Image (cartoon, rainbow, N blue to C red; front, side):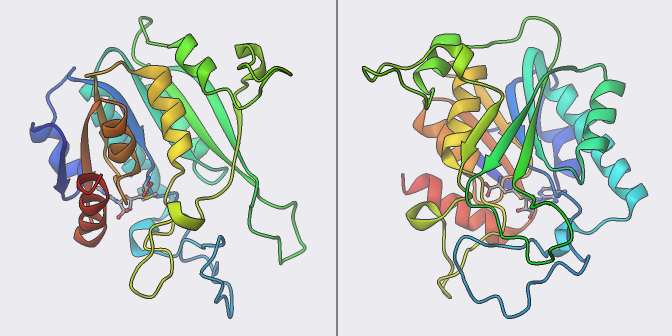
Length: 260
Ligand SMILES: C[S@@+](CC[C@H](N)C(=O)[O-])C[C@H]1O[C@@H](n2cnc3c(N)ncnc32)[C@H](O)[C@@H]1O
């Protein structure tokens, strides 16, 4: 396994030979949510701005296949984790059930379900449900000796005291307010539209990596996309490994990380 490297391919096929058992300190997995192909297109959506619907081939499964897929990759992640390692998985209401059930059956301990409140969530044009404005990050740990860098997380607390100091951790909840990636942070394609539909915020990864790793640790992301995990891990002095099935996204991630 080479550190600080992007591997192009299917994580379920690559991980058994690529990643040694008990070798990784933290995993951030942002898997397909199985949202696509369900009439989610926004008709005449030409914004190219903050609103991006996921409608991608890599995101289409039957319910049975999706559960099996989740069990396969989560089991491989479990094998890869060191004792005390952390597995963070991003999800929504659509796939949190499969993730929580699988985590429990693997014997992983669930420490938090962090809610990411998307401050610029897509407006609800259907007028038939409450507006979806949240995603979740499930934090599982392997065993009881997990890392939680209290002081480092406190430094990232967005809430300040009147004199500008970082507030105590009791004000830094399992509820994080962040916009969907937009502006300069959003990677654009040649058509000036989002290069990837689900690019995660740098700030979200900064908080997670600060909380659960130390300098020199190894962070794995089996669904690398635009490489947000590697980009942040590198900037924080951590080692990283990315696996991404789509060569085009792998190339975008490569440029992003190695241009840093
Ligand atoms: C939700 S996106 C991840 C986005 C990423 N967190 C970012 O910030 O850009 C999921 C990614 O996983 C990739 N993917 C889907 N199935 C995969 C598989 N079996 N193995 C590796 N990558 C896969 C997709 O091509 C997609 O880029």
